[in-house]
Length: 493
Image 1 (spheres, rainbow, N blue to C red):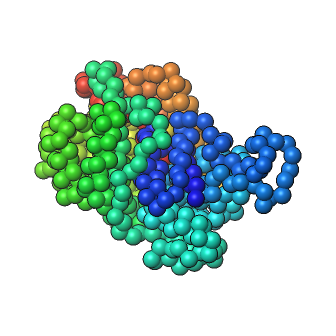
Image 2 (cartoon, rainbow, N blue to C red):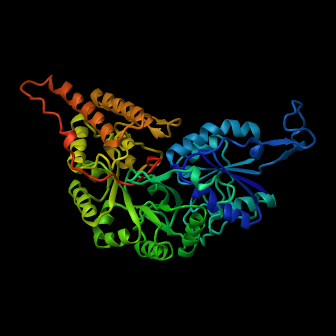
Image 3 (cartoon, rainbow, N blue to C red):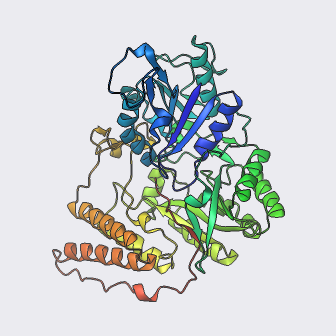
């Protein structure tokens, strides 16, 4: 049984979502090929089916039973929106090379887009804890009788024996990273002094205990999370350090979901590799609840924390069920400066409730807090996606304004009632795209975006009687801050 695992995009990281199931499948006796299309072109010989007696380049046709299938299963890893769209784009080419292989999609966005993916030819959809399901699929196909299934499986209407969403408590294997491009080919850590460090990636937990309405994790995990055993996480980090990693990103949706588990890992990691640094993602709500533990993060090598702030409008934060307020965010910024940790906030500044005035207010607050250098420019241009099964669909005001589900975009369509906001969004996208291509400093890009927002507000106010235009925001007098460490490929969905 030959299984080809394909990743199209994972934020510039060496894909955990290939390395982890590869270990399971190889242990079960499968031949596994891992293809990371974000770092290399498609290896056609890995996926094609060829005639048994003719060469792969032959133009002659032969009966289908005379084909040798070089890949029995082709499985796409789709952990996020961008990865799913790229996988769909590559699908026609792969199907033309091997129309006989069993097609599987696995990862967070697989069950969210199940109906569409099945119409494209997917035969198996696996979400949640997918490793056990992939092994069961391989065994079932090899047996040829559908007898090998995971314990909680119920056959679906499409004939799938494995559960579409599994929240099983798995005993993980140490990820097998052999066959993947070397770590130095992936995103690196950029230090304030210009040093670049090789960065690795692992996961200590999956899922999340929170229920933020816009989050794609919620429809799959429903407020639950699962732990990757400590010895597995540490063994995975050790092999990456041996491969040259000087920094590790923990990709958990919230590193403090299982706080005792996570702290035990970084404490042991620091004892073994005192010079190794790391970063993690932590919810604002959890940062405040466990503020007394922030010094422990710094002491064990944490350089920065990513936190999904999303916006600074308290009404919108309540609608999103984020669990924090603008004031909470400001307090967290202060806490991080007191402790000596860098905060890397992420935002969805263009959502259905955005106005040009509100967008400028967001920029003003970030500027006053001295966060222009802390913010990856792409965070200024992100527009809210409303995927299938999103919790946002529970809000009447969302249901009233969305259009049809756009399968190409994998999101419901929505537009602004005010054309000024739509034009501002398009302008900001252009500024950020051009600025990143030209390698402009973050602060310079922030200043350009501020100018665009200011012009949008001024154009509106010229139409209002006795409404003075505000002076330019003092971009040049941001509080002086040392540059923060960051990964060379920015976070976005």
